[in-house]
Length: 543
Image (tube, rainbow, N blue to C red; front, top):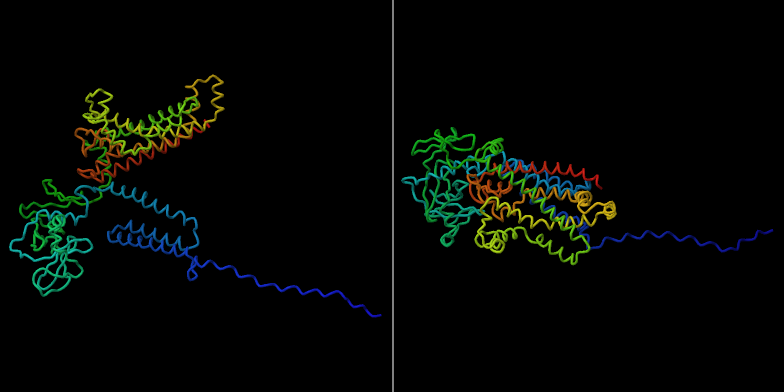
């Protein structure tokens, strides 16, 4: 028997697997020669960062500021490592903030601390070499029989200098660099071209009075020896050699006045002093240890004025927080009552002082409190001549009034938000239990509001402690305390006293003493803030 053949149609062979489609290529606009545009942008930014970083490193090395040099090298190396590696991803976001913190906070504080241990200030702003040059220049006289050189006023990188021709050699130099040979010339007279320098046209010198004064005051040393003298000019076209009557001896560290024979010796305090105690006006910066800090507590001329300023500073900071906070809380409670009509308009009017610039408000109130033509005396006291700005206690009251007027809207806003967030059931339960308005305020509202506002009050205290703007703009710290050094005034607080001692506004500058006082203010504010923040934890039991 024949086997029947299978007549079922043969199954079709499975279709062959198509090759995977090629992944779509990245859009042409996002890549350039196989490199992502993001990487190119990062490369450009890092190139700029490295350029500025290297500029700072070279500047620090040139100034021999090795601490700044080391910090700049570390920051630049860290930036390159973090942003050109795939590791340390969190640092890519943290490094900019850490860098700014180091530069604008840590460095400034560290530099202030460094200055606090030096005598840096008026008469002590440079090195000993600069002090020697300044001392020698003060007693300069023209050398008898010295030739008159035709000269050209030259400029290099914004620095003025002189150029002369002597024995066929062109010599040029500035106040910082003595005359040095820069070329040769066969022509007599002033050089027409000075290699490496740009000649300043004489017409520019004649037409520019400021440039004239700078040229006449310029002294270019003739050599590295400070006793050899320097070239000076009175007309910008010819110059002569001047030598000082003072002679510097580097080995013995003395300056001798050849006209009187007086010898000034270098001292550890950064001065040249004679045996009878007379010192030359210009000194140099030296480390003085804790002398500035000791002086703040032992100098009879400083103790009484600084004690007055310190007491007023604490009173000012406390009252500048307590009074406006109390006003803001009272107004917030009043205008939180739904029975008051027009609450939105009234709230807007009450916060208007907060919208005004503080320095403008201080200046306006300064005019209003003027004893002669101020509107305060004219409209509120019938034209009585009340010396608001000249009497110490009236001036303190006036500046405190201005600060309260400026700051109470802030506390009004903060307390309004805190009161509106209070649980209504607690107040209702207290009312049912018979608690009156004052009891509710003392036992419920105030503790709960303080829980929310205590950190703001602490930061406001620190701000008021250093509120320089109002003090300076309103009365410049006046009226003056009789017999006080550095122009300290009755309304000065510690931060404005630091301003006065630093001499920025005029007068004798004592940056070392000002920096020492700054460090003490920082410590005091930090300790008070830390203790206050610890005390705020006790308020949590009311939550």
